[in-house]
Amino acid sequence: MNYKVVVIAAAAIFFTLPLSAAPFAYISNQLDDSISIIDTNKGKVIATISVSGKPAGVAVAPAGDKVYISTPEAKGFAVLDVKKREIIARVAVSDGALGIAAGSDGKRIYVADWYNNNVDVIDANSLGIIKTIPVGDSPSGLVVSPDNRWLYVANRLSDSVSKISLNKLTLNKTTLVGSHPFGLTIDARGERLYVANVQSDNVTVLETRRMLPIATVKVNMLPYAAALALNDSRLFVTNQDDGSVSVIDTKTLKEIGLIEVGNKPEGISTHPDDRHVYVANWFDSTVSVIDARTLQVIDTIKTGEGSRAFGQFFGK
Image 1 (cartoon, rainbow, N blue to C red):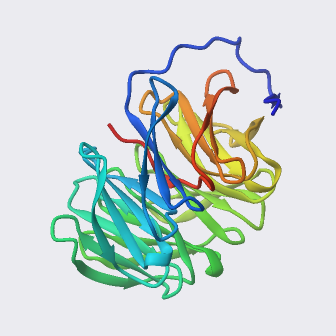
Image 2: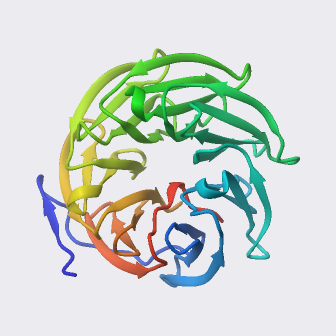
């Protein structure tokens, strides 16, 4: 494929640094029933781990020692030991386990139940369910606030986002956003939440304290998920139906670039260097690597069949 970039605003001068030494990216391959481990320093897959149950969502424990992978057909999630590079536990949680997130203190795991309209709270040590919290219809994307006080949930069929108190494990507030919200990302201060709305082809920007919309930004066809880079100055949004990533300036809240990636881009996450953005292309079974400064695709890495990687897929 010929990778190109269409930049709406003037792009910076092309200049690329080598990728930082590992961490690793953990990419769920739903059609392959596997996880690809990418060494970001080498720019290639160094291991493929079998994970049954059509793996979709990914969350890396804050210590970097474990990766949690939602397995919708197995009605739960699998736990990958990073050092052993093997699955050490399989946890039955709910009928529609999809979105998954890990608390920043390492003590809890959160799983969205697409069918039963709730979020399960799991103890990371015992892997037992602590509580089940009702939310909106078909919860999907999850994100935990940087201070570990709040969990945000995208309710796809309710066109809303719920805010859950992690101290009380109760629903705090639910706010309407665009049509069919799916992926969520939050800034480093925990002040702004960005919501990818699949059917309205836009991103809702929420002020988290009061859960009020402050902007709606038009992107391309079927936005799925989003990630921030360059000190939260740029937001990257995967557009499933036209094989692109929209780039939004978070100061002006305007789209400034449109980058061609692979076919059906879905999961997206930013390397800890805060500069390189990795995009899982479902139909191409590849991962595109974007330089956030130059808005160029600088590498394409072959993974497994049906790469989705929905969530935060970077670890140490």
